[in-house]
Image (cartoon, rainbow, N blue to C red; front, side):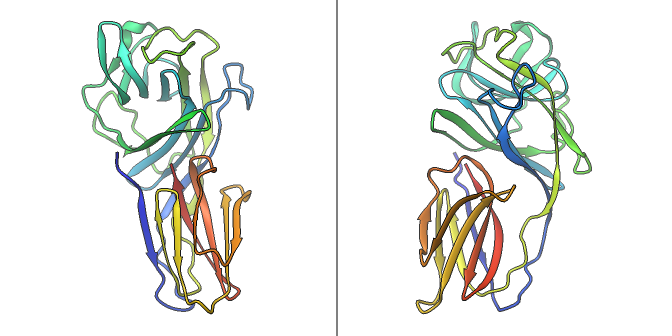
Amino acid sequence: MKSFFLSIFSIGFCFSLATAQTKTIAYQELPDAMGNATGSGMFFGATMDSDTITVTFGGIFDRWLALGFGNSMSPTDALVFSEGKSGASHAQDWFDYYNSNGSISGVNKDASQDWIIISSNILGGVRAVTAKRALNTGDNNDVVLSFSDASLRLVWAKGASASYTLNNHGPSNRAFGINLPWESTTGIEEGEVAYNWTQQNRLIEIQMPASATLEVEVTDLQGKQVYSSKQVQRFELNDVQPGIYVLSIGVNGKFSSSKILLH
């Protein structure tokens, strides 16, 4: 698996960093089979630029999981964690799948594997994957996405019991007709102070003069604070759910913000 590494260097006071237009969907619990906003135990967040989509998706760790793009359970372009199905097994992992019909015979590993798995881990009983692919992979089995899309249509499914072998999930272990709106943002906000910081996985490290006054805050895309500190230059975000967050660093009262990805 590839580890996520990001390093940003601000090189002067009142310096505006170049911005890249992106769209985001905040990490959230997906609706359940009855359309209730909570209770599914399935989670999703995403970011999209002009060429690629990156998703973070998760659910209960002890069974197969599937995320699909589309309006219905079939046909569906899906990202699936499993060990295959009876008669067509494979290594236990995340794979690009195509569901051509409503029976198990139509659920098959795609001949073209277009998802790049960035990370896969288990946190708090939730198996979460962060993966990316091109908006248009050129594969006829993959949904074509566009940066101009106003929303993303999703389905999800999971095993009815603890098993990684694909089988019938039943009516209560799936949901379709999910429509999540994209929110336009910039990839990097304006930088106002000189500092260096790095991220490796969930570790954030800030380099700054010893005499400076440091304040740090991490919030989700809805503004909820998940971490804050003063004069702490090295910290880990191990108890935070996977997703996209805003890191704000204040040096001597002047703040700068950037987006970070936790998986």
